[in-house]
Amino acid sequence: MSVTKVETQSWFSRLKQSVMGVLVGLGLLLAMLMLLFWNEGRAVKTARGLSQGASDLVMASPQQVDPALEGKLVYLVGEPLAPVPLHDTHTGVSAPGLRLQRKVEMYQWVQDSQSKQEVALGGTQTTTTQYSYNAQWSEQAVDSSRFEQAAQYSNPAMALRGESFLAEGVQLGSWALDAPVLGQLGAGQAYPVSQYDLVALQHAIGPQLPVQLVDGQIHVGANPQVPAVGDYRISYSIVPVQALSIIGRQTGHGIRPWQADSGSQVLMVQTGVVAAEQMFSQAHSGNSSMTWIFRALGTLLLVIAINMVLGPLSVAASVLPVLSRVLAMGTGLIATCVGVALSVFTMALAWIFYRPLLALAIIAVGIALVAAVVMLIGKRRRQLVAMPPPVSAS
Image (cartoon, rainbow, N blue to C red):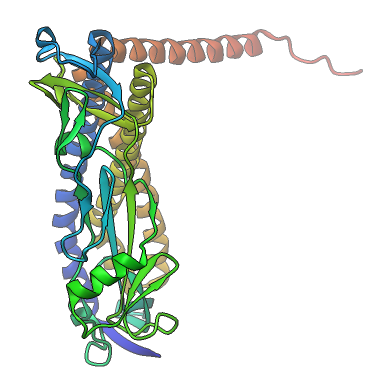
């Protein structure tokens, strides 16, 4: 079912709103410039820390802890022992392993909206919004009080959420592996819930809610084939006991993050036997990917911020809708060009601050390329001027 809502906004009201948007845009612009500058510094510090870690790394023995390596960055490989099974205290599900992840989804109403805007002569804007509602599974609680049709489509409170459980008392030879290390592990592999777990869950939540097992997942509700709003779907993933490769600072009989001279920290944990060189290589790749994600995000939000700053221009011109559309395209192009330029300029400043030698070398190469192009163009022009005029046929 869908419902349509029509709203009108006067030219003056839109202009006042766009002026307020200028303040938000300026704040966003400043924040993104700071983000881009910080990101370049973070990337440099992380890369330097990883390079220092790769050169300072020491191999440690799982069988015994060497006091001489206290505070040093060590590389540890082996299969740990987890004497205490993982246990979900809310559902009663229990399994041997290093990490257990509970995923909880609730069947709930979700609102979708599609809007269409039209500007009339004089600047009055009419917004037609169509709201539609459908029920779907979601890990996040959807606040139905914000719905346009909140009375007709109401979601209950989400009583159970996703949670992660780490094994206790884990030992790798003479080493104790606790939350800082085990927390680095990923979600692992799917863990099919058993009938025994289902009985434990039914006991934990009480007999008032029907519980069923469907394809290794727990369904809390009357009919898993036709779920109702408020039903739950619970699934698990687990990291089983297996060999681990760990890089971190030796602290007593445990492992903690190691701090490099650059200020960045190193603590890496992977399942399986992974060479230290490969772990550092993957960390460098991850750092590079994160750097480019922040660059792209910062640049995009810069463009949006500048567009907000220029917003009053297109609104002011909207008394003539055709002129407004042309001006909106122009301000959009200007915002894109200025945003990209500001992004590049900010990153260049950050490079000069964090990597002055490399930045100066790149600037020198850039100047040399520009000079070469200018000289080539000048030489070509001189050649054209020096060429004799064509002889006309008599």
